[in-house]
Image (tube, rainbow, N blue to C red):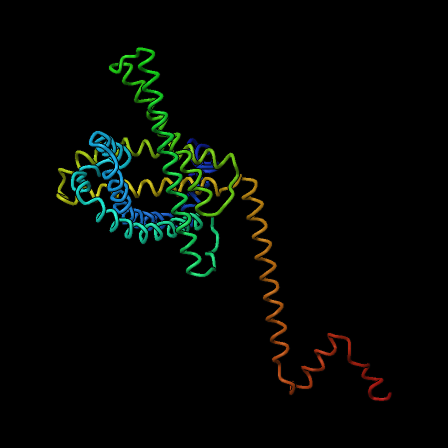
Amino acid sequence: MDWLKKLPVVGPLWVRLTATHAWRSYERLDRVKWTRLAAAMTFTSFVALFPLLTVAAAIAAATLSTKQQDELQNKIADQVPGISDQLDVGALVQNAGTVGLIAAGALLFTGIGWAGSTRECLRAVWELPDEDENAILRKAKDFGILVGLGGAVLVTIAISTIASAMVGWITDQAGIDREGWGSLLLQATAFLVAVLADFLLLLYVLTLLPGVEPHRRRLLVAALTGAVGFELLKLLLSGYMQGVATKSMYGAFGVPVALLLWINFTSKLVLFCAAWTATGSKEQEFEGHELEKHELRDQELEGQAREEQAREEQAPDDQAPEDRRLKDEKSGDVPDRAAASGG
């Protein structure tokens, strides 16, 4: 792509684009094969999603009233567009104990696998080596990560619920009409509240999940970008999942296929945010590349020296006399011929 730099108009724009932090983050993603990482995250997320929703719905169905159950189903529809139609809340109410127990067991298995896979993918973006530790200890750590993530999700849901309730109360007290401009104001406020909740959740995902400490400014920018992008993805794909996906040629597989598409885009967004936090400034990357070049050169010289030494050690002792004489002359160990002949 260097030929683009030589074009009269496009060249300067291309140079400016390739110097941005976003482009260098993309180069990191391309270097670590991010499409494969996103595919792995998509599969494990899709497998773990249904047990998670079933456990949450079963617990809520057994403890909430009918009105609250409807609100829960609407909340799930907002967070995971197109999936609420697949949940039969009435059946969950009747079989909450059995369904919840089975789903909890499945969630424990799939959730730990999801946590481990996501952690490894995020560490791959940071170009960190795989952790060499006991398998049982690693699973226990993944379980702790899963529990911590669940707690973070509960906190963000609580913040979102409280903030939404406060907005509704303020709207009623101020006498703002919920139609027309009032409706737009409420939708914008709900969007901002959701962005705040996603922002807090991404702070956990981008730091504690891969076990890294990124630069604070890059972390805040990445989390905010991811939060806004996640909400935009929900808005853009919800119409497709609720409308086109249910009437497409896929038939009964329309919603799952669309859900896979949505999860894949979300996974790529998370990977981009991770790459943003892992990519240093241009000066830092230049210094890192120069240091890497020097290290590779030193390693190459050391390897050549070891090979030369090994060849000398493996040389036969019965070398030709002339070869030994030439070697000794180079080292300065051969006495003068005249002195050697006694003349």
